[in-house]
Length: 108
Image (cartoon, rainbow, N blue to C red; front, side, top):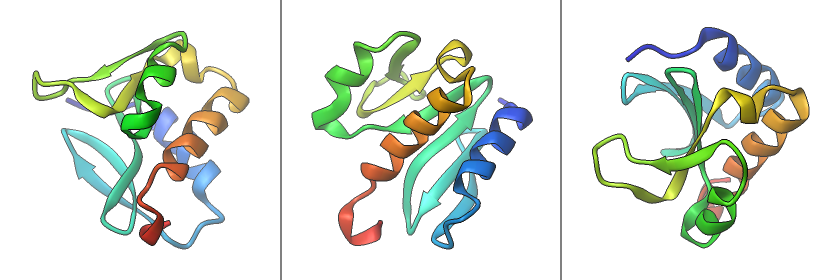
């Protein structure tokens, strides 16, 4: 599955000031990594965000989200955010920030 280049560029812009972020092709999409841990990514038209197991219920209560179930088994600490949930710069900034905050502390 391809990923939305425009969304990926918007995420890159948000992360541009960080020196600890790298990109890795994953899931047929693109992951933004801090150390060896994904903070967020882009798969198809959707943003993927690490929200952590403790933040999953709250994240899934937000509009335009659903469990990350790429393998058919939902990942409790990761969600998809549909394009409607990342349409504005503020929305995308908020989700990317959430992903960064949920990277294991020794890596962030």
